[in-house]
Length: 137
Image 1 (cartoon, helix red, strand yellow):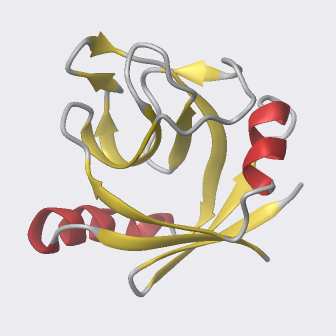
Image 2 (image 1 turned 30 degrees about the vertical axis):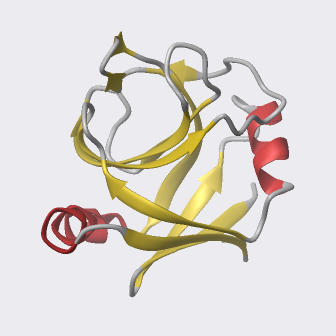
């Protein structure tokens, strides 16, 4: 199992790559590491942050996809009905866009630091966009 470190502001999480269930998404995402972006509050999906990626594409289709990720189950949406994005659920989430329900590839799972997920929501709601960094350990 391969783990990544995810840092949001001063919060640090350890996430397991879901290499068995989403091998292509994991492999393509790892080529981007270290990966730095901004995380903002999701508009349609409930208690989640998202990283809007516009027309950016990874060479992946759907694998191990879901519309109802649990807190800490990070999704990559490869695009199609809506723009490409990464969804970071910190609470109750129903993945959607203004066009309706979406499904994204569950490719990372937070395995350490889950108790800090609520703080991610507080940061996004009260302080706006936050720096997020994904890196190999």
